[in-house]
Image 1 (cartoon, protein in one colour):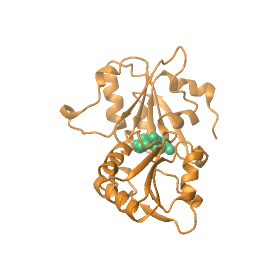
Image 2: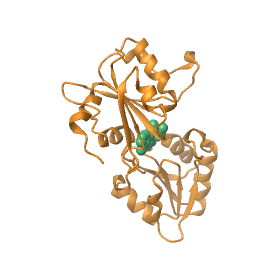
Image 3: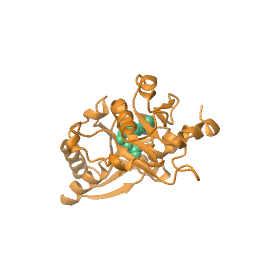
Image 4: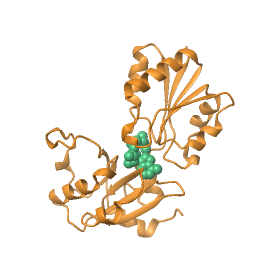
Length: 243
Ligand code: SAH
């Protein structure tokens, strides 16, 4: 029986892959990857390595998780080194925990290899620090992709009133809702917000605006995209560096 490496691929820029991830990719017998993992990474695999793609073009319509779990399990029965490659970090909205539990229940050994998460690195490439002395003392990473039925929302919206940074992943499709919601909670209409599309790659696009105008300014950006809310967004003026 093989071992499964639940591996973070980093946010896009291939150089943000960890040394540990690269080493295991070079040894892998099979690599199971999804849409957000940079495909160039696959060029690092040895010849004869099998590749299994488990994402569709729209990140919200990946293969059912149960199916992916099954592929991981079966691959581990037939191979020595199985790499499950995920965008960013496996534990940040990556379902790495679910895959680990599934494998443990079936007696398959696994390791986690952390990755650089888009939640921090994508703003960083855009010159937006998630914390900054005197501006923001904490940051939160929140999913924007959850039930539209408000009674079922698990997001603690009422806690979003301070100047702490909020990073929304999977929230781009709800940009209008999110910005209106934050205004309704008492944030000024002029409050800073940025949308960053395809961060850390040569296709990066950054749009900075206010809660009031961001939807109109950013709605046509390509995905993947994340949203950063907070006064730290204004630091981009001084910290912009990536071209
Ligand atoms: N595990 C991943 C996040 C998975 S959720 C991580 O740690 O980065 C997927 C969401 O991440 C996307 O909907 C988008 O909001 C964000 N994302 C991932 N890569 C991105 C990129 N290069 N640029 C902008 N947003 C990105």
